[in-house]
Image (cartoon, rainbow, N blue to C red; front, side, top):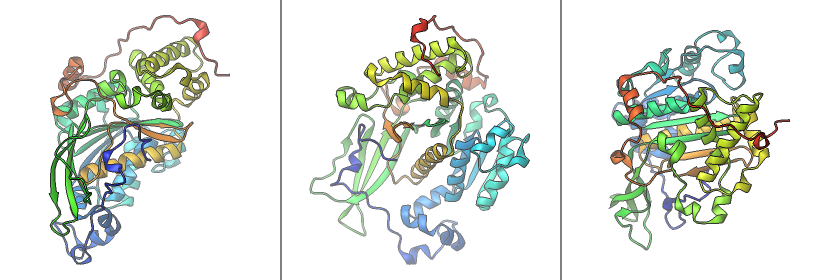
Length: 423
């Protein structure tokens, strides 16, 4: 889905149309760098969309996908059908009856089997050309070297502490990282590509494209004219990223949003609620219990604190929204997992092909508004590879391959009047 424009892209301006790479019929009739004629015929439509070079990079990609629930099913399906070279699916949990609601790669016959193993046969049938590997270990037991062989690491439906440790490991190995999760009608996609270069082909405008900084995260690093068409320019851009640790908690909204009341009111309260959920699970090692009065009180308090820290007006955090969010925690809704999984998979394909602007850096889906808006969440200071690690403990945990501890602090008591009612 499109961004709401609050963190607008210069690439989306009307005078700078993006030109899809053209593929000559004579070119696609011949194998290129190991791609057979059969593969060219199979992927003909997408080759015409993003080009032969991009398809070659996709074909050579080795993807790691963690957790095979409904969202993981959707991501895996889209990547396998796109023709990636290999995918490793990791999940140590077993299939239950609950999984049948939003997971189309498994059936009742798989109940009791490992979730990754159960989904693997259906994935292979979707595209026998893709190498599918199953890992039934707990991802939290892996050391940082485990992530080194993969082109992209995708972690879904995990707690915030685990995502932080995995992201630290991917940074140690200089690997692109995606995190995503869904809770009923709400969800998110996060990207830490560290530093990512991509090339846009577009018609030249009356104004020359200048090399240099466009936004805090984006710069133009090179501009050339396409040899086959002097009216088309090839613009190389670079996006800089920060970590899950920062984006999930302390990073503020960009000034383009916070400086204008209209834009602040348009920010979905789902962002504040997601941050509250991530902090609650870090503190307690579990999601809030809807039947526990103290859990509801503490979640309400945290959500209000997160909303205020983002500089958002208190009137946009309504009790009805809090109630809806809490009731959706832990649920899987197939249309939502399909939407988020499709968007994440498409961004991975764009990143591999290096010919589209990627997510920067957090997409939040709000089922109440039926919107998936993009927010660039970064702290002050360096970005990209120069970003100083603000979590030495997480770095140590990743380097040593340690599991996440169970010790958690206790939140302060909350006035009962602050608790929302789920009735």
